[in-house]
Image (cartoon, rainbow, N blue to C red; front, side, top):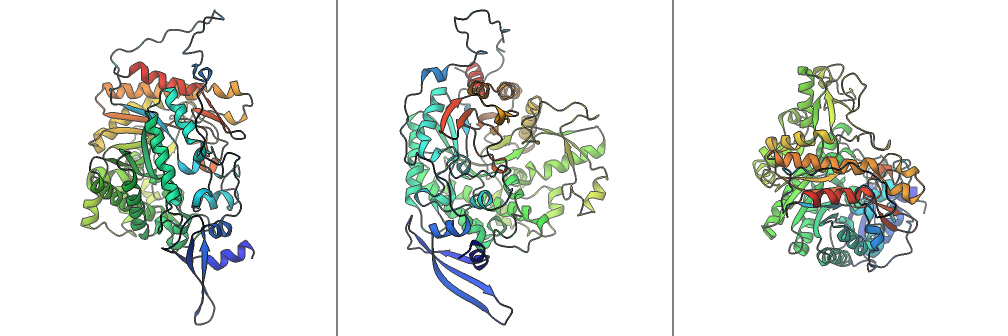
Length: 578
């Protein structure tokens, strides 16, 4: 049967997992319903395996020649030689580099953790291996035309699913002490709920044990955007309150399995972003009657409930765990000293960080500027839900890449709020990377494929202080992702030109120095995670945009340290309290 015909048959069908299934040959009972123009509906029941689900909704996927777990080999000493700015060989002579003196008043505390991060769909590959079910990103990369600008997929990615031992050995050899990874929900539960895939649990068992073997602290994220496709097609994913129970049960499985081996947990990654993916492209997923403008906020509502439910559950299993969620954004700088721009800044905070941080760290409910909008369609949190949400974050984990100038819309805030067709509605604030006068940028730009990203490390100290003063996180602040895309790195063809990444190298040096300034001023910053462990699938940008501190040859899957990796580790070692 043609794909389009099957898709029409299954669109909107409620597919329920068989509790007696096993993987990878598991089956799921499926009820597919079509409503005719007559008085009734036509219903059929059939068996749907994981492989069937892939074939119907995604289609063929690519594989790599390495398809079993690889034991690491010794890291060549030549690959651990820092670049010339840090290392001065005896020959040839003549190189002169100005001395960078150490500021003796700066220091990272002994327990400051520093590491690298990656996410399952972006790095694992092996998308159908050992019973993994499809996620929404398998459909977005395979089926939705031009959703990924390069038409890339995560089918193979960095082949981390089989080469994770090598990856952990490499970062340990470099001197990195922490590895933050995400767990693939649809590996653990191929249909999002129901029978557990033991092979997936065993995989993450070994990944975590390998971290400990190399003296690397594992940090785990439960959800980094790769929603099981089945849940999206069954009830609309994050648009439905059904997601709360399914996410909580998934969290129960994972917490019970790993709580004695993993201390640091993040429930959800950047809900501001993944909720912003709604509305998803039409005709590929279950249809919804929720208006487009409301969908991100329904998603956010259920994300807060799911996060806080998982938080309370995790604490009940092991009260010593550190559990948080990861928000994202940057410092909001008024572009002028006008009252209108000051008001716009407050709206920018409310519709970004405060959207999730106020409920978790302050009140259990939305900031007033956001609530003015969402109260028209979202249900109020009950007193029990407020109590569940409030305090459900042990540290303030923030993915903080850059900062922005913020200003009022040209038409004014009031006119924007009154006009739902305004392109800035409902936030009704505007941003730019340019100082007033539109001449000087806030800092050097990253790759053109990331127009939202400029180096803005000068604003990091005041940003971190703002977080501490505003939300007062009891466990301190973690910069849980930071990094920059090296401009035009994709166009470089020789390995030496790829490995020298000057903008990224300077970004890490300046950013870590900015954190040192914040620490010296009394801000409790507890750790950093560089994004990313290596170049990977950068979502809709595919592999055209590079963030890694390692280069990966996607043809051979060989890994190479870039200069930025050494700069990141060097400045930490230089200032870490001994």
